[in-house]
Amino acid sequence: MVFSSGMAAVMAVFGTALLANGRGSVLVMPSDGYYTARMLASGYLSHSGVEVRVAPTAGDAQLGKLDGASLLWLETPSNPSLDVCDLARLIEAAHEKGALVAVDNTTATFLSQRPLELGADFSVSSDSKTLTGHSDLTLGHVATREQSWRDALRGFRTQQGSVPGPFEVWLAHRSLATLCLRFDRQCANAMKVAQFLAKRPEVKQVRYPGLSGDPSYHVAVRQMKGFGPVVSFVLGNKETADRFLESCRLVLSSTSFGGVHTTAERRARWGGDAIPEGFVRLSAGCEDVDDILEDIAQALDRAVE
Ligand SMILES: Cc1ncc(COP(=O)(O)O)c(C=O)c1O
Image (cartoon, rainbow, N blue to C red):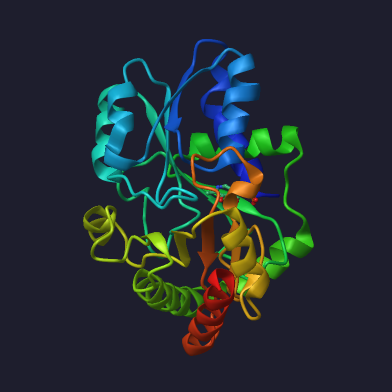
């Protein structure tokens, strides 16, 4: 079921799986997932009588919060810190406790990670990102195997008015034809960027699930077919990170991710995430990787000079 944005898709799952049951529903979600989904939960949902429990993605920490849960919400790799949780393990545990499970699959996409095949009830995605990949539209979707959930989502979409625009859907349909080409190239470029950054002394805490030393690596190789376009890292402080971004010529400053052009932003400028001021989230595009690395190298040199 396609929606007008990723957040509209998120809200449709919250609405049908939690709010439709009236007060007393319990939502368990990551403390480090996408900020706006957390705000929606701690604001509107909790004011509507939903109990919201949070735990970090790393170490499958939601396992300890499942008693009495109605919906387990997972996001892996988490945005922006790129921790990975073990979907099969969490889904099984949640189902044993009688909870539904939804997975935000935005960062991985369904090419890399298949939550429904691992037993999830809903797979949710912001298709404004990698899936459509041209940074020119907002869209989202929810996939489910159950006809009754599909019907409920459709009903919620009609009542909420979150139908996608026809032009956006047309653009998305055209863009999907190149998804697998874009995704393979972006994953390959992201891996090289992560390996390059890991060797630079001024760069700390490089996170990419495909790096063999990354805390997410062992679960990620089992669960994902590609590690996605997003890499994160930390520069000394706010000023250094800002100088890095201003010095980039090819890497564009942008909040969104997953597009054909390499983009980056200093994530802490928005607040709400437990990350250092110098934390940078970079999304590798489809350019020649040598051009990307050359640009990052010259921008790092300028940032620390
Ligand atoms: C993981 C994740 N889920 C959902 C969303 C919301 O998507 P949209 O911007 O299409 O509403 C985002 C947006 O950044 C995201 O990163």
